[in-house]
Amino acid sequence: MGLLIVNADDFGYCSAINLGIIESYQQGILSSTTLMVDMPGFDHAIQLAKENPGLGVGVHLTLTSQKPVRNDVPTLVDNQGNFHKLNFYEKDFMIDEDELYKEWKTQIDKVIANGVEPDHLDSHHHVHTIGNITKVFEQLAKEYNLPVRGNYKKTTKIKSANRFFSDFDSIGRTKGIWKPYEVHNLVEDVEQFGSVEAMCHPGYLDATVFENSSLTVNRTYTMRELKNPFYKTLFDQKGIVLGTYGDL
Image: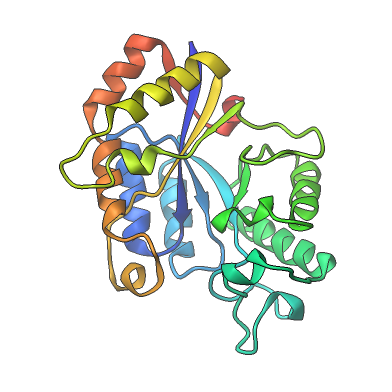
């Protein structure tokens, strides 16, 4: 027996993605999601989270999309007041750690203030794995006593799933092509490591997605796979339990 946390990133991105995530939870194997605070679909996502209390909800800490929640973080933004894009962090960069701490703490606090208790932390574009950002990320995880996505080498003792599986999106990436070897790898990981987070990006599509996201049609293919009854049957046969970070 092992624990599988099937986590959807980008909850709160927009209403279309929100609805796809909830449908994947209600009709499929999705068990967890992470919420973006600074996006147009935040209020809608909060409402849906409250209507679906069995869905684990973490915070998808944001540093590379839209605008910050705070207005006193000048090193985190460009000349237009938007967060720096991901490529800013893919080379030598300098940001104020105190500003990052304040911004991310405010994002977490906003989720809590809206009546949703987060059960873990990760970040948009995995920026928590980059440079001195990791230090701030881990500081907040310890402060709030929250598990984290374990897709990096932790520098302190923080709870996470024993394995991070990043390939679920590609199982259904191309219409009509199924990749059973990746399903086999997922099952094998759960059996070997005991607890696994499988990251995915399901969602419906709207103008917000097409205009702002590099992931478009694939979100619908991923949603289709999450709702495929094959997986629930397979996991039951293998003794794999679907759960949340609260089950660690």
